[in-house]
Structures are given as C-alpha cells and as structure tokens.
Amino acid sequence: MEENNRKCFCHSGDEEFTHVHEFLGSTKLAELEEDPHNHRFAGVSDEVIEMGNSHVHEIITRTDFYEDHFHEICIRTCPAICVGNGKHVHFVSDATTEAEDHVHDFVFATLIEDPIGE
Image (cartoon, rainbow, N blue to C red; front, side):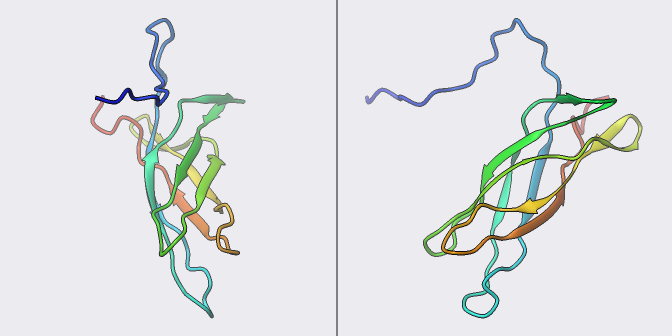
C-alpha cells in the first residue's frame, strides 16, 4: 500500500471551532462568440475572520472541468447578512481566475450556517 503524502488540516482540540458555510453555484457564461460555456462549483468556507462588528469567510475552490480547463475561485465573503432566527448568510460576487484566455463572473450567497442546529 502506497503512503499518502497529502497534508491534512487537523483540529488540535486546543482551539474553539467557530462556524463555516456550505456554498454552491454556477458561473456566468463566458466566450459567448467562440465557445459559450459555464462551470459549477461547491464547497465549504473557511472559519470566521472577525471584521468590525461582523465577520467574513474565505472561500477557495475550483470549478468543474469544461473540455480542457477549470478555474479557481479565491475570495472573501461580504459581512454576515441576518436572515432571521439568529441565522445568517454571506454574499459573494467576483470573477474566477483566468484559464484558456477567459474568466467567468459569479454571484452567489452562502447557505445558512449550521442549518440543523438550534
């Protein structure tokens, strides 16, 4: 059996968890004249980054493949947006990294943190 050399991020137990958000979405179309296409993405944000009276999260992920390329999404969310019952989401809007001489715009909101928690 081959040894797995990947580095894993493990919680040491010394620090307290904050929270994360799931996200999913699709990019807007690009290359409208030559090869119109978009990409899908999904993942889980990083933990809380305190910012003023609120907080943000970093999101780092890759899109799915289209023919021979993918794009990366590396962004910080906007501050928390209350949605009632003590829950919140975050808004995200930017563009992917460039690949095959184009980028894709995207706009999405994270899912509610801890959706089945109290």
